Length: 359
Image (cartoon, rainbow, N blue to C red; front, side, top):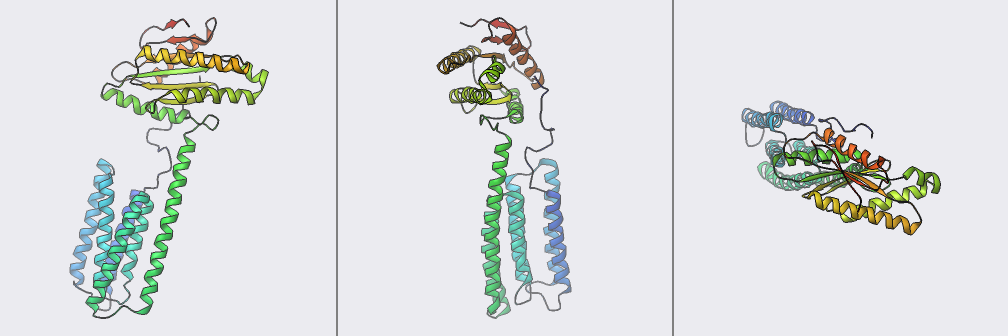
């Protein structure tokens, strides 16, 4: 069996769109530009003086700096993401109210908030930010022109309409990008021939289950399966028939396992399973059924199909995945190289390997 392949512990399973440093830098940049804008404006600001506006901007920047420190310590949460997005929208609303010009440039801050948070955090956050931007934009513009004591100019309606179209177009694009990302993740985790999980996806799932096993009672049974004489089938009947044998075995096993179980193609004609909440005797019974079904399936097609299994029950406490795989692999080796093949070899992890004769 080849050495275990897995991504480094800190590497994501797919490219991550969230870039916290960039998001903090953009927020600081927007706050700084707003301060420069209101302090250098040639006409008096609305509602508040520049000094008081500076205080609000300072509070906005302090909030996000504290949020950054929280992220470094605890990581991001759904609540912190949504709260940050709404603080951005509230800051943009305040900027619109303070802006003294007929067509307020600060209106673009709402678009930046919706796009930035949406692209960073996904479609659901974008929809929420887009809705908030629309509501805050309408309310802010209405209050803005009340404070100016005049009606909106003709070109503002088209200005706002173009912003709405741009935002909706961005929503469609972000939705498409998110769908493609999910598809890419799904394809990267699936074996193209059988449609079940591949080796890398299995390693991630096994690590997660072992961590859950450490925290509480979660019975786990690791199983390796290897199709006997598969090379001979390939050489005699051709690779197309060999592929059909692999797909047939995968389909039979997948149809019998539960959603909580893990089933993957480990490589070549080797498969791996993790049965959750399964007693050892129940697991052995299931494997004997797989063996019988495989023999019957092969007999109907005139093919010498059989399968050998290595099996190990994970003991309580902390366990090393590499060691589990090594011992169960040893059990599979015993099953493959003893007379007759088509056997189940049980390797209670941490103890000597025992052989169960095929009934």
